[in-house]
Length: 270
Ligand code: ARG
Image 1 (cartoon, rainbow, N blue to C red):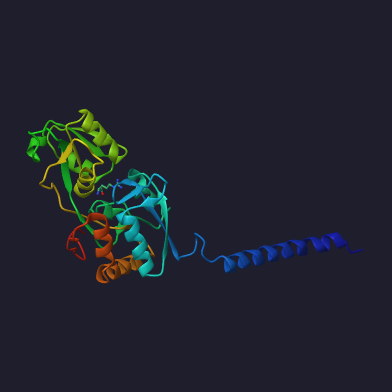
Image 2 (tube, protein in one colour; image 1 turned 180 degrees about the horizontal axis):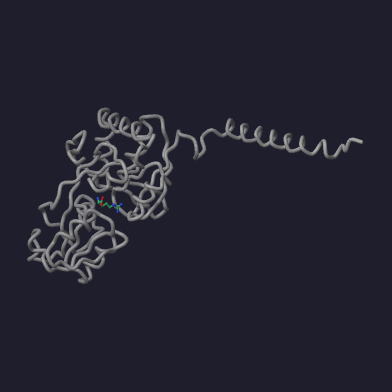
């Protein structure tokens, strides 16, 4: 005699599998603009880097690089989903491909190019020394010897500080904290990105501090991606478009009130 139950059970699984498949297909067709599709980029940023990226008291993410990233993506038909990450974790997150890109005043360096990729440069930057307003003796690289210097972990400022003879380097997780310590007299100087610091000093966010006029380095920021990223070409194309159609200049002037610097297409780094 044929056992009906035994006969039906295998078909039941097939039926169930077909239903699941149908459901998945339907979901994908009805909601094409979700995270996993290639129309939207997941972009990491560290929103403690005024005015490049920061949060308003209402919690809204704003800044030069927020506007710029959105404009670049829009120019090539993409949208952006920002994800906040500490600066120090950005490179490993990119290496693990947990985000599509990162924009956070990230300097293009030879060392970093060994593990991640960068777009063409979109911002001319450089390191500067910040001291208390009444400081008279720290004026240049040589006067930093044997001083207590604050830097952000994992930054180009931290790398630079290592080259100063007999300096005592104090590292900080977040940029703004070292300025507080400098103000309190716990450290003698900070080495960090000049543009961001000048902005903060000018806009009264940093009281009692001054930036030493001469820059220590010339650096360029790039949008970082994992190596062999499928999005890098589109990002570069987006930068080309916003540079040539005036959008870049408009965003630059909105945040910095000055003409943007000339940018090279490529850096002589590799
Ligand atoms: N330009 C420096 C670097 O690449 C520091 C950038 C700091 N950025 C930030 N979002 N805190 O190392």
